[in-house]
Image (cartoon, rainbow, N blue to C red; front, side, top):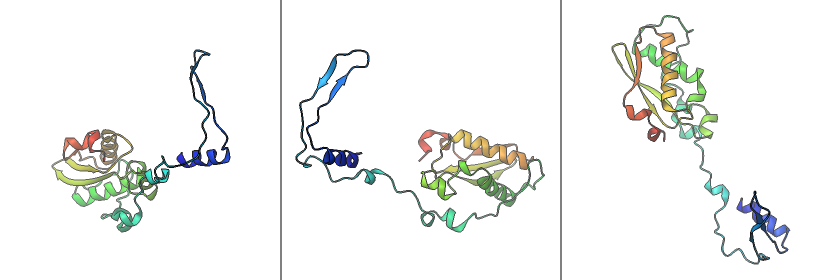
Length: 175
């Protein structure tokens, strides 16, 4: 914005007059005196582009470089899957690929700051315990609900999918 204003003022160096009118009244609220631009001493050298954060690159994210630790276990909803750690890891990998807008596993999502991840912590009987990390576009309870639905469709032995720490479902954890 500062650069655009600078170009405008350089192209039109004449005196500028501004009049502001209240939307419900015809009476001017403020009338400035003519001003000319003679110096940029009051401006800092900071460019607007310096304020834009640098998005992560594939080389800065090992998830994009190394791929998934477990290969995706591709199965259709309703298909019976063995309830063990390796199968659940594979289903989670497939979930990351089938619902990519939830997670930060693609270059496109990383470029806009979505770095969210879901990882298996443990299998506690019929309960799958996961951890949510990074930044999500969606609310964290929504992400957990979608992951839970994905897992339940593919492995009927699962009773529930929960997070390791309830704090992971708060807005404060979305960093």
